Image (cartoon, rainbow, N blue to C red):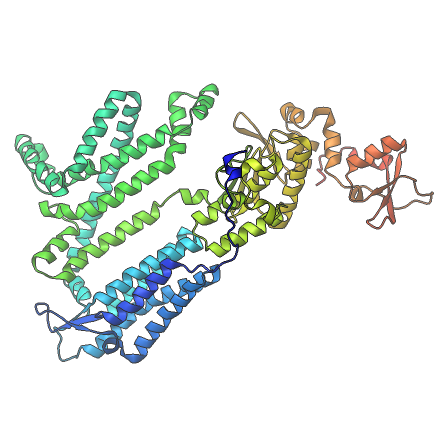
Length: 639
C-alpha cells in the first residue's frame, strides 16, 4: 500500500466562516488611529511648531461620525467576505480617499482665521496613518477582485485629480500647498532632472545588462568574475559610491577639456549617472541572464532545424520568450533608480532629493514631503506599469496532454489552485470547486479528497479541465489534452467539452493533430505548416474548398465527403413526405448525414423516413437529394 493511502485524509468542512483578517486588522487600526491621534496640527507660522488637533475638533461631531461610520461598515464587510462585499468595500475605500481632502478643507475653515494669513495647517499622524492604511486596503481589494490594471490606474488617477484640485484652489492654508506655490518653478525643474537621470541610467543598464548576460552565457569564467564584481558594487553604500566617483571624474575633466565642456566633473550629473548605472547592473544582469537561460533548448533546436540563423533565433525566439523575466528586471532596476536618484542631490546632480535634504537642514518637514511624495508616486507608477506578467497567465486556463496535476495535492486542492493565487475568499474558492466538480461529473464526496494517482486517465483529465476553468479565465488553451487517452474515453471527453463550451461560451484554443477531433469541436479551424498559417475558416468551408493538396490530404483526401457528411444534420437535408408509402427504415432528424448514409448502406435502401423526438415522421431523406445537393454551387459554400 502506498504511504499516501495509509495516511488519514483530513475532512475539512466545505462551508465555514472565514473573515478577511488582513482587512479586519487594517480597518480596525484605521478606526482607532483617527480617534487616538491628532488629525491635523496648526501653527501660526513656518517657524513655530504646530499644535495637534483631534478628530472632533477638526471636523466636528457630524464629520467624525460620518468617517467612523464608513470605517465601521468596512470592518463589518470584512467579517463575511464575498465578491459583492469586496466591491462595496472598494467603493467605501474610494469614498474615504475622496473625503480626505474635503476633511482638510473643513478643518482649515474651522481652525484658521482670516486674521492670521501666515498660519498654516499640517496633516497629523492620524491623517498619514489613514492614507497609508487606505492604500494597503486598496491593494488588498484590488488583488481579491482581480481588477484589470487599467481600471486600477483610472481609479487612482481620479482620486489624485480630486486631491490636486482641492490643494490648488481650496487648501491655501495647507503647509504642503504653500511650499509648492513658493517653489513651483524649482519643483518642476527638479522633477525633470530626476526623471531624466532615471531614464538615462535605466536605458544604459538595459544595454549593458543584455551585453554582459550574453557574454556570461558564452564564457563561464567571465560569469563568475562579473557577478562577483556586481555583487561587490551592491555592498558599497550609495553615498560612499557617489563619493568614490568625485576624484576620478575631476581628474578626467582636468586632463581632457572636452569632457569638462560636456559638463563632466567631480560633482553634478556625471558621477550620479555612473553610480546609478553601477547600482542598477546587478538586478538587470541577473534577470537577463536567467531569462535567456530559461528558454527551452528543444524550442531553440526546433528553430535551428527550420533553418533560422543565430540572429533570427535570438530576436524571434529567445528574446520574446525571455521578455517576462526581462521586464521584471527592468521594473526592479527602475524602482531602485528612482529612490537612489534622491541621494544624488548631495553631489549637485539636482532632482527631487534637493528638497528632501534642504528640508532636513531647515527642520521643515513640508519641504521634505515636497520631494519625497513625488518620488513615492513615481515609484508606484513604474511598479504598476511594469507589474508582474505572471498575473496575465492566471487569466488563461491551460490543459495539457498529461494533465500536469500536482501528485501531492488532492483533487479539490488542485482545482482551487489559481483562485487561491488570486486571493479569492475561501468560501468562493470552495463554492467554485463544488460547482466545477459537479459540472464535470466528479461527485464531491467521492473525488474531492482523492490524489491524482487514484484517478483514471479520463478522471484526471476532467480534473485538469476543472482546474483550468476555476478562475473563470478569458481564454482556455488546450494542448492535445485527449491525446494520451483511449478512443472511448477520448470521445466521451470531446462530447463533454462541446457541452461545456455550449454552456460557458469560453474562447478555447485547441491544439490537436487529430483532424476528426478538430472537425468535431472547432467553430473556426486553422491549418498550420512549419509555423505558418496555410488556411483558416469554418470546418465545412475547408472541407469543401481546400486551398492546396496539403490541406486536402490533411482533411482526409477522398474521405472528405464523409467527414463533411458527419458535420451536417439529417434535418438540413430531408425533403417533405412524398405521396408514396414511408420507408421502413427510420432515422432521427438530429442524426448526422454520415449516419444516414451508413443506415442506407446497412438496410440496402436509397430512402429513409425522418422522425422527430417522439418518433413521428416529419420528412424523408433520399440518396438522390443528397447527391444533388453535393454538386458544386458555383463556388458557394454551404455553412
